[in-house]
Image (cartoon, rainbow, N blue to C red; front, side, top):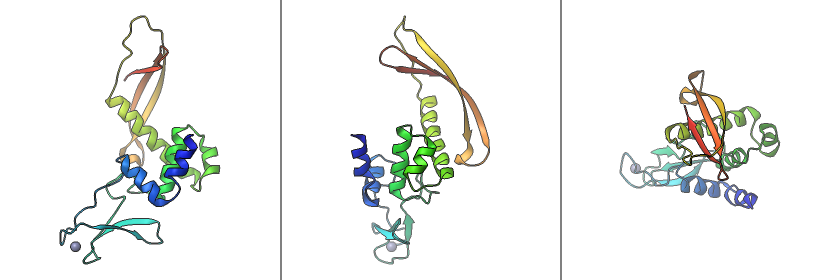
Length: 175
Ligand SMILES: [Zn+2]
């Protein structure tokens, strides 16, 4: 079932771009040209793997589709981004992911860490608690380290406590 979604959204670059746009992680609305203010068009660039917005009039003014997005510094194809998101979401081990996609193990390690950081930050910023009294909660702890701008040395460490309780597997955390 889920594999069908992967086939659908990672079957080519256009499908992957649409998927990422629909999930608000890639610019959806074409920008206006800073020179003539016309709406720019999305076109292929380079060897056809990159996508840029280009001024329909001068053709000189361009803006990379990945600009200002989470993927700005990435050279991955859009379909590879969707593949990595899928593999990470299904907890596929890195070595297996490396066998399944045409992306280096080092790159997979980095992106899986970024995805985890994003989710961690979301949970740290949006905590919620298991409310029912009398529910037995299992707790565990994890040391979370954050890299500045996703690169370089670790600048922030934070312990996150997680809890699982009840049949709904609600998760509770405090840090
Ligand atoms: Zn223009």
